[in-house]
Amino acid sequence: MNIPYRIQLDEEQIPTQWYNIRADMPEQPDPCLNPATGLPVTLEDLTPVFCEELAKQELDATTRYIDIPGPVREYYKMFRPSPLIRAYNLEKALGTPAKIYYKFEGNNTSGSHKLNSAAAQVYYAKEQGLTSLTTETGAGQWGTALSMAAAFFDMDLTVYMVRGSAEQKPYRRAVIETFGADIIPSPSKTTEVGRAILKEHPNTSGSLGCAISEAVEKAVSTPNCRYVLGSVLNQVLLHQSIIGIESKAAMDSIDEYPDIIIGCAGGGSNLGGLISTYMQDSLKGKSDTRFIAVEPASCPSLTRGRYAYDYCDTGKITPLERMYTLGSQFMPSADHAGGLRYHGMSPILSKLYHDGYMEAVSVQQTKVFEAAVMFAKHETILAAPESAHAIRTAIDEALLCKKTGEEKTILFGLTGTGYFDMQAYSSYLAGGMTDYIPSDAELEAGFCHLPNVELMRSASKV
Image (cartoon, rainbow, N blue to C red):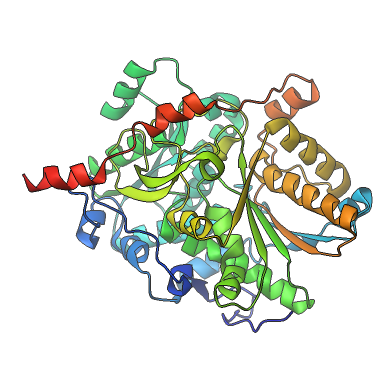
């Protein structure tokens, strides 16, 4: 199947536009809500937190293609287009008739796809005349990517890093500091919300929700500063669409079209980017590709979460999104799922999943590392634990093809490298890694804190 490709590439094979999937969705995700009123947010609500152009992108559900600014495309040329690779050796080892391709986003210093959105967000902040930014990071890829972009565009940056990851990955912290950013393990005593979380959970290893709360508080209390986020938000999936655009162009050039597309899923940025243009075909009835989101069994927002309005952060200071969530108060275990340990999922992906356009599976971390080690031995790339979730499911689907004899084409996202995750690999290889799956009771403890939107609206009218 060869469906015409619509977005133009420049002479360096860099896409000239991002693709906004919301323009083609039959039903839009429910609107983001102001936590003070329970009403849909406006541009004026968002601009104290985000820079203006990003706030506009966040709310734009109609513009199908958005031009990539020239300076951002120039920046992209240092590491894009990223390679599309066929895993011949893995196919041979599995004895599968399936063809396995992966889009490798780890060929930059951040080691991940995160630089695609970091460059855009810092550029827009610089154009607005801002002087500093704040953000959170889980496993550290986003913090690294943003520190790289901030250094290039000469912006100050403060990064709140999930404490468990900061302790597991001191060298990731060193890379972030090398590019000039300040990094603070979260939760910390540097913010009111951080101190409150520590008082309630003094021994917590932290979460992305905690770090987001601190970063937002820092942004709104610092002159000429804004907050930027590496996943979940509509604007981030827009920037990451470059992954899918390039993937489709590359596969079209060899007359291939995936039957199955697989990506790891935490907040949803890489998965949303990878599936973007292929999902466009599916939404228009031009293909029947299967889309599979793979999440950790320890933090299963799609497979065991609730589709409800919830805060994006633990401190309950952000707007509310309708998404698959485990509850903003859910504290994930300190396992090696890293950047996938977030309580909620992108509103766009949540809506696509809820409406039946996507599938989701959860996998345990020992099975994830089993797949990562096999992949490394046959394809020579040491994958990040997050990426290895996609590898696990790609292997499972390829083995199913072996069983059925079907010659399917599989595409998965290899979102980053695992060179800062050697503690996790060592734990697995030594036999010390265990699997954690939250009980129904533990999940219920998170669900009971979901906000009552109608009560919120009523209270705002008093």
